[in-house]
Image 1 (cartoon, rainbow, N blue to C red):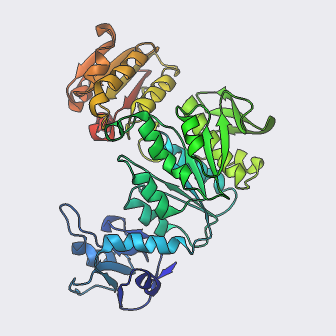
Image 2: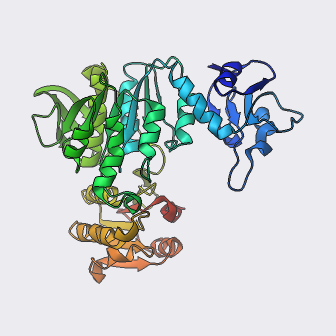
Image 3: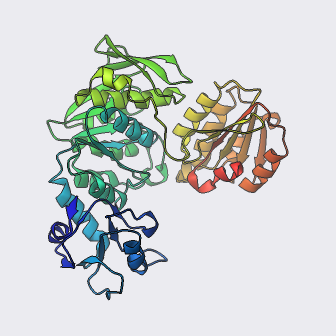
Length: 444
């Protein structure tokens, strides 16, 4: 709980009304929860002040508004400031100082949300844990995430996203994490970083800013492992699926169920099942497990942490239809690293026919054709029966695949119509593309 007067003092604001407490923050009136703070932000097309009264009707206890906003009937306690968005960041910095939680920062080109969710699941076995919800991982989302963190939380797991140089350093300076995890360094957003080493330097900003008494967690199979290790200002905890001498080593038992055995410095400590397929997900889980163990969660408690684990959103969401077809909706986002990982996992599935629907990957800049072609070269080697490509950029995937194995469509609606006319009994269909392609519409 945060008192309205306390928040106002942090941001040099004016309190108007009762000094009530609030829990949680939102800037979207549609997600208002009882006793939260509603922040009225200026949007590209909508002024959040238009929804202040509605937010109170929905249960908000406080609204953060501009100094000159005229009060309206139905308004409750207000905190008046020059700029509500700036005030959220200022307040988050102040609130960070009173949190007792050990803060874990998570970033990476691919797998950061999965790693964040797994880390939070393991840490909940050791104490009260708050974590980033959805994709609240940027310069606006992180302050909201921080202010949503329970004051008495033992652990906080905050995701940090970046698509331009300098963003991770800014977020790290705001969050002041005690622990850092980097899931991967791939080619996501390479349009803005030019090289993979540039991406490594950006993600590595997390490791560079860790306190001496903190620690960094990184996989030895990370493509820029050496660069990241050298950037770390704190102890580095190494994980591996290949090197048994690593601090935490995983021996995969079943890649489709994500079952693996963990060895800590050579000693077997736990058998884990994440119910997510793929070597990449085992790697993410091992990073999360290592973090939890280093923060004092017992191996035995970690073993039982994932009994009801499920990823949020459209991340490997399995949908079974009446015709016995199995659809894998993994269309929340995509870059070459995550797309190849999904395809390799999908190729292991048992189905009468496997169909991969692959759409454009965004923010690849002048390397777009090259990186789409890289995906095409990999998928043509896999036991996937049909690859349907959709979108302009994905033509570069199609060019690497034989015509007998590929069909290309300009748009999603064409794919939907084509598949709706096919006999998909006992087939498996993967949907993978950048979020803006909206491949999930095929399922509708």
